[in-house]
Amino acid sequence: MPFDATGSIDVEILQREVEYLISAGVDGVGIALASEVPMLTEAERELALQVVVKQARGRVKVVMNTSAAGTYLAVHYSRRAQELGADAVMVLPPPPASTTAAETIDYYDQVALAVRLPIFIQDVATSPVPPALAAQIASRTPHAWYLKAEAPPTPPRVTEVLALARDRITVFGGAGGGFFIEELRRGSTGTMPGSASPEAFVNTWKLVQAGQIDQAEIAFAPYASLLRLLAQGNGVGLYLTKEVLRLRGVFTRTDVRRPAVKPDELAYREIRRQVEALGLDRVPASVAGG
Image 1 (cartoon, rainbow, N blue to C red):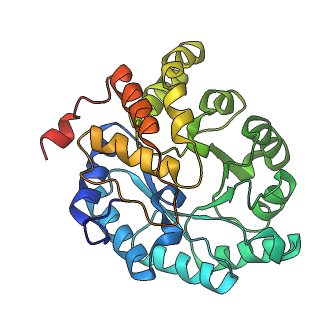
Image 2: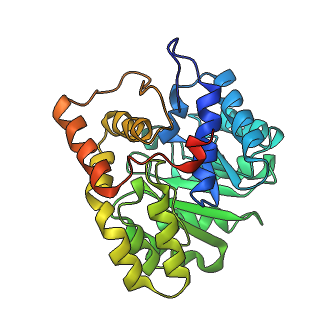
């Protein structure tokens, strides 16, 4: 999420980012944890979604994160996402320390009753949705159900979910896309990585779709070090992702909502080296052309 000098969402840069992603060939854009959604006010969440939907103009799908600590609020966010033009919602379960499996099922049931949109169950290490529970949730309503598998290790999680849920769940990877190839081999049909190097994922996906998964692995391998650096937690990865976007001519500032740990200068030199080695410092035509 781009912020201006006052700390507000920079609408013009957000529009530019959407164009940059579409020009790279992505099939969809998401507003989620990597977009610092938990740090946005309700008005900012709605503004961001409205800007992205308007800029996308139906050219790609838009997924909005509508997670909340409580069922009522998750339902509210999901309804607003539907009203504002999102094509799907993505929902983390409530914090595990405050709920049970039965409550988690009811939480997703209520969201499913409230909206007609496809629903991504987001499975992360801090709020995991075990494969058996994900399959149970998806069996209860006729929605299009997706799972974004991010609780490590993700590759075997993809296998287990698909074995249990069969055709009731479509599985995506996540967690920065570091295990994209391994997830694809196990049956995932997409991923939601960060926005630093979309062409890496688009090109890899095209090769896999053409039945050339070994060639896809070779093409994807040079990005491993970059993705490893961007996967750092506590805000470090957010700063570095925005630095990549700045180097690519998409962002002008790299502000992150706090609390967040800012990388040291060596980390910035390391990320710049990776950007140069991959040729990502060349400004995309979509950005150069406005």
